[in-house]
Amino acid sequence: MVASIPHSGDGAARPDDMWIISRGRFTDMDVNRFGVEATPASPMVYCISDLGRYLLSPDPIEVLKTLVGCDIRYYTPIVPQVKEKIRNRLPAWIRRSARRKDIQSSEVLMAPPRKSAPHLEDAALKAHFRKIEGFLTPYAPIAKRLRGLDLSKVADIVGICEDLANERSLLKLEGAIEEKVDYVVKNINQEVAVILGGAYIADDLFEMRGFDFRAFDPKRSHRLIRFIQDGKVKACVLDANDDVQFWIADVKRIRYLQLLEQSIERNPELRNAFLKCTEGHARPFRLFFNRKMEIDYSHADPPQIYREVFESCRLGTDEKDAVISSLSSHQIGVSFSYVPGMESGECRVYICLSVMHNVRALEPIKTDLPQLYSEISKRASMCESGRFYLLDSAAGYQNAQ
Image 1: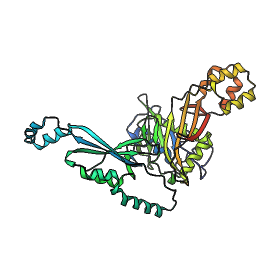
Image 2: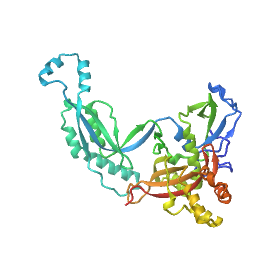
Image 3: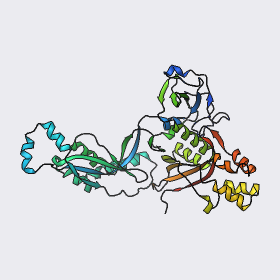
Image 4: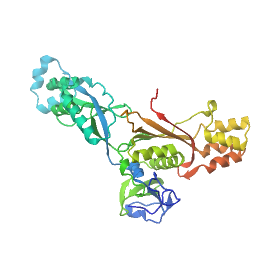
């Protein structure tokens, strides 16, 4: 469905636009037909992009991770061996239950790290090299160890995956032990599909690899309705027939969309980072909202925006100190991490950070420095999450040497 609300409030979207959510406006839609009683009767309606919908959706997502090893979990008898004959006489379901509780030891197998390969644009050539790697995996040390296991002693095999930031996570494997061995042998040091519960993977953290940036269409939008019921904010996304497509479990994510929208509008480097992903020149990774940022500018140069305002307002040293001391509160960091396309094939995570600041932090100096407050207020955007402006920005490779 293409909604009629322009996302920026300033006109129609350009073909290369990257946007998340429009400004809200009241609507006369009757939400009681959704089985709720809203107060006030007129809820707020927003227009969200495909990316905005992805960030709110409860649907599972699929991402690729590299299978780098496995954890072999063994049975360890909990009764003396002399009593094994007695246990063997028990019904099979009791023996299986007991054995599940006997898992006490494990063995972790890790494959040697893959060497960096040259960047290949040709899909057929890349597939050819992957096929060759597949032929060689049965001869790897980890494959030989798995093939030599006494499977009667193995309770389970769990995969170990690594993502773009070299963070490791466990992968539950399906099937019998023999099938799990085959899976690890065939896929070791290869990318495998991992299903996650949704884009929102942890507090304030979104997984971005599940979104198809190449298919992003700035002209396509979806309607989001927000209203009050029994004193609580509720929201849902509608389908093409204005029926509920899904309810938003945590409405604070709408504020995250608004902060991201403001960050993209104010920080050209962040906007370009998203556009690189839509153009296929970069691979997205994570989106993080850091609500605990407290950058202290008293021991560093003030942000560029304040260097300009200090000069135009001609402030004294004491006045500058008062302003700088107010900057450390009400900060929210919006960071987008991605892997730029590199000819060398090197996989390094690049982070683009926007430090958003709420004008509310400047209230204590509003009376004494009205000109400065006015200058900063002009740069702030208003939404339900507050009046935020871009305080600072930074970008660079993660763990750069």
